[in-house]
Each structure stands twice: as C-alpha cells, then as structure tokens.
Length: 542
Image 1: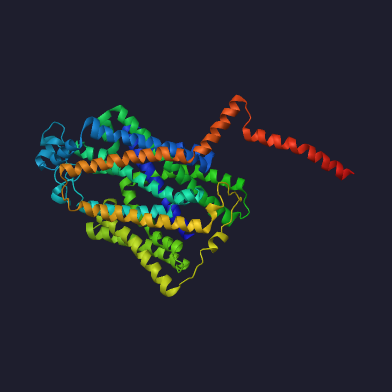
Image 2: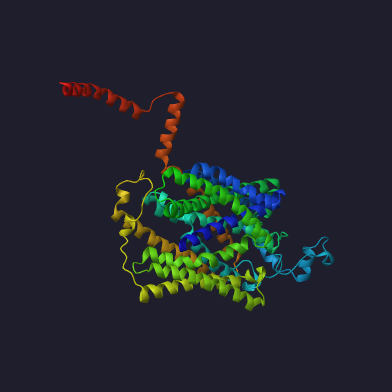
C-alpha cells in the first residue's frame, strides 16, 4: 500500500500539471474561463481511453507525438531561419541585460514613460539576471539554473520510478524493444525542452515580450511567442501541440490509475477471482471518475495560487522519497521490504518538515510564495531523495539484510488471462534478458553521466557564450530536434511494417472481397483431410 500511495501521488501530480498548464494556455489564447477548460480538457482523454484502453493509448500516442514534433520543428525554423538568426537572437539577449532600471520602466509602460510603468524588477525580463555570470542569459553559470536542474532531476526520477504509466508501457512492450525503446525515447524526449527552450524560450526574452514571471510559470511563454511571430496561426499551432501533449500524457495517466485500482485494489483485496471482463468494467469507471475529479482538483490548485511551475518543483518533495528504496528493491538482493516502507515514509515526512522550515527561515513566514522559492524547493527535494536512500541502506545493511532470489519474482506474478502473444521463446530466454539488462545498464549510466555532468561542466569554461559558441548551441538544438522528429516518426513504422502490412492487406481483401492466401491454404488442407476423416469414420463403424 505504501508504494501504491506514491504511485497515485505521481499520477495526480502529473495530471494536475497537464490541466493547470493546459487550462491557463487555453484561457490566454481563446478567452475561455480556465475553470471550463479544466473540465473540457479531460473529456478528450476520457472518451477514447475508456473505450480503447492501452492499445488505443499506444496508437494515439504515436500520432500525437508526430504532430508535437512537427510543431516543434516548425517553431525552430521560424525563430532561427525564417524570421531571425542565432546572431540576431544573441544581440537581442545581450541588449536585454544592458538596460538600466529607468529604461526598463520606460519599455514596460503604457505610453513609453516611467510615469505609467508597470515594470517590477524580477517580474519582467529586463536588465541583468541575478545569479548569472555577468548578469547574462547566455551562460550556463547560473545559480538559479543549477538549483532548478537538481530539482528537475529529483522530480523526474520520482515520476520514472513511481509513475505506473512507465511500468505498464515497459511490460506491454516486447523485451527486445523495451530497453532500446526507453533509451531512444529518452534521447528523443530531451529534444522537446531543449529545442523549445532554445527557440521559443530565448525568443520571449530576446523580444522582451511583456510576460511576467508568474505567467511564465503557468506555461504561457510558448503561446505568447508563437502568437507574436505567427499571429492566429501561431496560436492555433500551440493549441494543437498542447492538446496533443495533454491527451497523449493524460491517457497514459488515466490508464495507469485505472490499472492500479483494478489490479492492485479491486483484484487484490475485493475480488481475487475477477475475470478480465470485470476488471475492464472497473477500469472504465475509474478512468471517467479520475478525469472528472482531476478537473475539480486542478481548479482547487489554481484557486490556491498554485501554477504549473510551482507544482512541478514540488513534485520531487512528494514522491522523491520512494525513488531509492524502489531502485534498491529492484536491483539489490539485500534490500529489505520493511526498510523500504520505513525509508519512503520517513523521507517524505523529513522532506515536508525541511521544506516548511526552510521557507520559515528564509522568508520569516510559510506561504505559497515562500514555499515556492528555488532554495526552499531544492532543500525539500534533496532531503526527500537522500534521506530515504540513507535510511534504506542502513536498515537493509545492519538491521534486516535479505538474500532475495530474483528468480522467485516471476513465480509470484499471476496473470488474469495467460495471453503471451507477441512473445517468442527467445524473448523469454533468461540469457537474452540478462544481455538486454547489461546493454541498457551500460548505456543508461553513460547517457546519464554525459547529460547530467559532462555536458554542463564542459559549458562552464565558456563563461558567457560568444556568438560562435551560441551558434553551435543553436545548431545542436536544431539537429537534435530534427533528428528526434525523424526517429520518432520513421522508426515505429519501420519496426511495425509487417503488422501494418497485414492490416492493410486485410482491409484491401475485405473491401475487394478477396480471401487471404492463408485462409485459402487452410481451406485446401481441410479439403485434402476430408476424405481421410471419412475413411477413419467408416473403419470405426466397422
């Protein structure tokens, strides 16, 4: 039940972020009240997820992802090739930090004078950036950037380890595809924040659009820049991209929650002999109820003053304490189950206490604003993941060491229906699974070290980027975005070409009335066997 709680927390937090960001963007672009948007958005997920299940989620996710990358590539081309260039954006960013307070007040005003200004330092992008090398945006040496990076790592560790949607996708995939698919998927996914931040993110600051820090935290930077550059067409593209992202991720979260309720609660504690049909009914009910409740919850969060950015930073505090205990339970034979439970709950309590104490010490009060600063959020996130890891290691090493045989794991997995279609004998071979484990472990660690440590460290000597260095950075973002778009579009079609061919062939045969070759062959064999059956029946009668 402990990790079931953390799994639900992950699903609720991720879905909340989707609805908070989605509703805020829809309201900004269309004028629709965010409360209505919070209720309408989930229905796009509920309808096809409840009827199609996990298979519908896989198919729709592919289509949605292709559209998302199409918009991403379009935005990169618009910013750096059609309208501006890397040198122009560089000059604009350099100019942004050169303005004095009086100049900023004149820029952000109603009539170009300080008398009607609405400028507040730290609210709008104007003047030097506190905590950055030389106050520049063109550097990796940033105090706030470092803190956000660490918070981001802890929070996303939490979602990957605790979110049921990742687990069920891995289990549903063929073992030969899962390891490579997740590694390649992670590389492709990184292009989305990297390329969008480099294009739309930097463009918003370079153009000095009147976007406040709170609006940026609500996820309104992309729609603002797209509308500035392309007008109504830009608004439409961002709305399409937003809808694709929300529906794709939202469907995965809905399926995850329905699986947890149907299998880990209903089948485990209420009806152990549940059939597949009964579990399906429970799953569909849960999908509808979860979607509606999340609409209400997102409105409640917004009324409390919590936006997408705040909830994102808080994510690691809530679920980070489950990461290392789960990691240990999957990879360490001495890991204690009791110790994992104690570590997860203790880490959560310590994280929340440390988070609130940090807010009180830094600001003298505990409010939404004081709890949302980078320093306070960082302390809570680090306490969550590090304290739970230390507690579990101590408990498993000195108090309750185990000697678990992971071969026993398969014996305790009970299927509702013994459907192993798509699994070949080779993919169930223990030696093949060990090779896949070794393959993904080496490359996973290598990629983590490169992205988390080597790349940022190599950028430190550059200090404030030169024009040529920034041009290389932009080129890398463009190449990564295009490469990811090609891979994410072509590779699934290539890997599933045989299945797609069978489906298309079946559709053509159905339309034209032709019988498939396999069906004709079966019929011929049956006709050849018919005389033999008649002879056998005659002998039996005799």
